[in-house]
Length: 360
Ligand SMILES: Cc1ncc(COP(=O)(O)O)c(C=O)c1O
Image 1 (cartoon, rainbow, N blue to C red):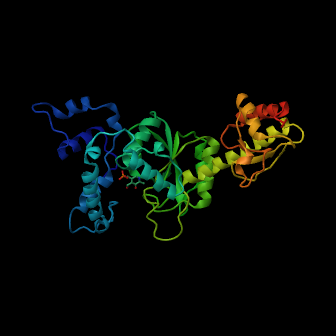
Image 2 (spheres, rainbow, N blue to C red; image 1 turned 120 degrees about the vertical axis):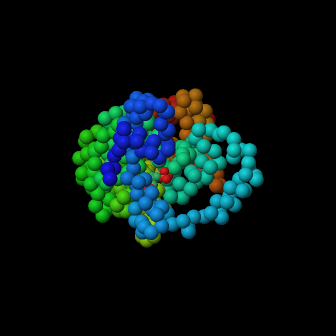
Image 3 (cartoon, rainbow, N blue to C red; image 1 turned 180 degrees about the vertical axis):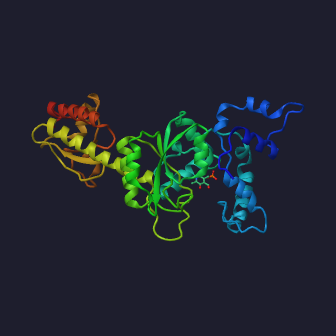
C-alpha cells in the first residue's frame, strides 16, 4: 500500500467511495481530472484512513489507528451539557456567531490555557473544528509553493497532508527518546524554514517527549533565527506519570521576560544619562517596576501635571503608602514601552524634574 495516492488515483478512490459520482455517458476520469484544481494534485490519501477501515472488522486486533477507548467517552456529560445549552441558550447556540467563535467559549478556553501556564486573552483564541482545520488554516496563511517547513522526522501524518496541499517542502529533524535533536534543528533552521512544526508531548507517532532542556534550546534557537513555532499539543494533558512540562509558548513568554530585562536596562541607562543630581532609583533584578526618589521638597503628585503636559506618565509614590508619606517618590514601569521609547520618555521626565515641581 502506498502512502501517497495523488491525482488520478485519488479520483478513482473518490469515485469508488461514492464521494464523487461519475458523470453519465462521459469518459469520466479525464472529465473530472480536468475539473479538479491543481492543488488537488498535492492532496494525498491517508494510509491511516485505509488502516482504520480494517479496524472495523471484528476479528482484527488493531494497533493501527489513533482511536481513544470508547468506554471513557463522557457520553452522559456531553448529553447533559448539550441539553442544558439548548434549554438555556438554544437560539444563541444555533445562531451564526463571529468567525473566531462564541465569546464565552473562548473566555473559558483562555482560562483553561492559563491553568497550564499559557497566558492568552479570548481575542487570541480561534475555535476550529479539530486541530486538523487549524493546521490547514496555518498552511493557507503561511505556505507558498516550495516554502520549507521544519518538522520532526517522523511527524504527524495529518500535518504533512495539510501542508502538502499548499506544496510545502520540508526540513526534517531526527528524534530520539528526548524528542527533537536540537543540534540538528539548529542546522536546519539555517535553511530558512517558514516555521517549525513541533510536537513536544507524547509525539505522534513516536510517543516521545521533548525534554525541558531541549525545549528551552528549541525556543532560544527559533527566537535567534526569528522563526515562528507551531506547537501542536493534543496529548499534553494525557500524562500517566511524571510532571507536566512547560509548553514551548510558555517558555517563549519567559524569554520575552528577558526582553523585559532589556527594557529594564534601557531605563536604567536612560536614568544614568538624564537624571538630575540628587535623584535616586532602585536597580530591580526582575519584575516590571523601578522606584525613583527625588530630592527633598519635590511632590510627585504635583509633578504629574507637568509630566502629562510633556507627554510622559508615572504613578506618584504616595499612592502606595498605607499611612501617608512618599510624596517625593514615583513608580516607573519599564516592561511596556520599547527601549527607544523608554529613552525618550525618561529624557522628557528628567527635563520636567529639572524645571521644578518643587513645593512652594
Ligand atoms: C499530533 C496531532 N495533531 C492533530 C491531530 C488531529 O486532531 P483533531 O482530531 O483535533 O483534528 C492529531 C490526531 O491524531 C494528532 O495526533
